[in-house]
Image (tube, rainbow, N blue to C red; front, top):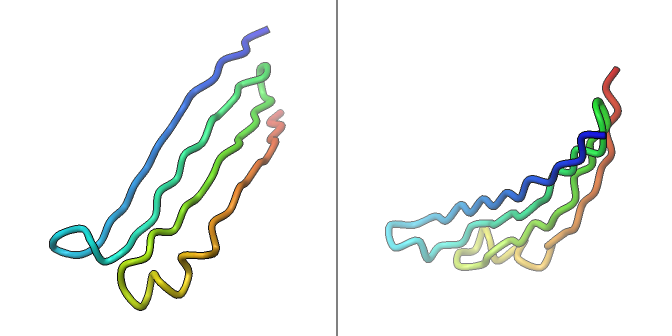
Length: 69
């Protein structure tokens, strides 16, 4: 069995002072065994401009399982 967990974090901010919105994403990739992977995480939209204020309440959680053969 080859179970490993990798933690990842990504943030993307817009504007010259990084105050016009953006998003951040945190997720874990779990290698359950050879060819079986699971991802679980969160996406957080950050308001600050009209474009991002429109989606700032659409945060989400996600999960997927992949089998490669």
